[in-house]
Image 1 (tube, rainbow, N blue to C red):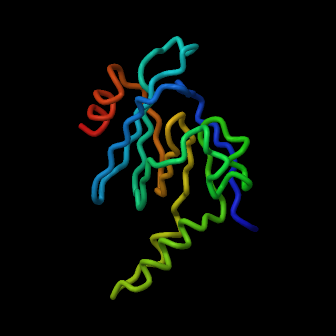
Image 2 (cartoon, rainbow, N blue to C red; image 1 turned 90 degrees about the vertical axis):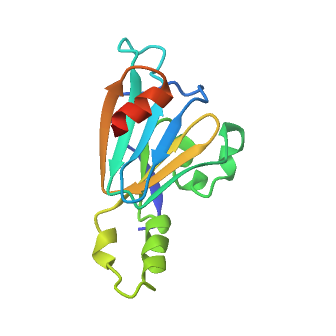
Length: 150
């Protein structure tokens, strides 16, 4: 089946128009994205997404005004409001191909990975990882991201 995006419900939403999202990523560690809670959310604490087994993390253009230029736009990104997963991801295939030149390649590493996609006001977040956890942490997005890593 060709590459396509499918919405993934995680039971929480965030402020879609606040450009204060923070992505923390490190070598061989988790990647953490902290977002402000949706204005209608009675909890009010930041939504923090933490990916483990992370092999790729990016927070890059396009912003919402140029989102139709993203390569996944016609593959399901067009209807995505919150978090999605990319099935048959060309990004994961490319990472596996890239890893193939390693003296001891581990193709099995890529079998359990998922490509996550999250459009924001100012950018698109893309993460390739094994697992995703959702947390609620108080404070600013910077504080929440750092606390999640601590």
